[in-house]
Length: 174
Image (cartoon, rainbow, N blue to C red; front, side, top):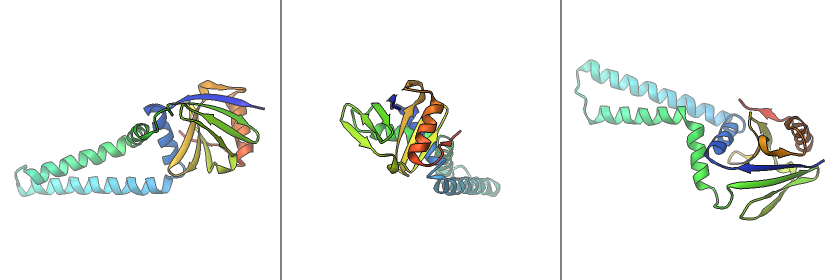
């Protein structure tokens, strides 16, 4: 059995990949970072409120605290989009489009930059979202494949194929 897939790597797709990594291999680190971020926001709010209760005027320290709180809040709320955009901007030119052929013994990927051959044992975790399959190789490296452009079978058949090839179940990410 052979599957083929064409994928376009854009900022939206990279955000999906960042989310899949955050919810799987980066789960513990992400949780700690979120707890720390919310604690810092709460402390900033308490600091601001104490300044108001003392009757202090709104000066540079209060404005700097609010600005820092706004940046932290935006990072917490839009983490995946920010990480996806940064990854998209850092990608190697010529890797915007990827063609992949999946066979039982491994898979090949082709971009304008070159071709690569991969073995399934290098995949640490396979994940699935509504629109993509994500192959996670490490906490900082992943590839994704668009379900809409999958040929050679249905997404269900591909999932079963990947589960058998990788040796672990595909983890669904909401």
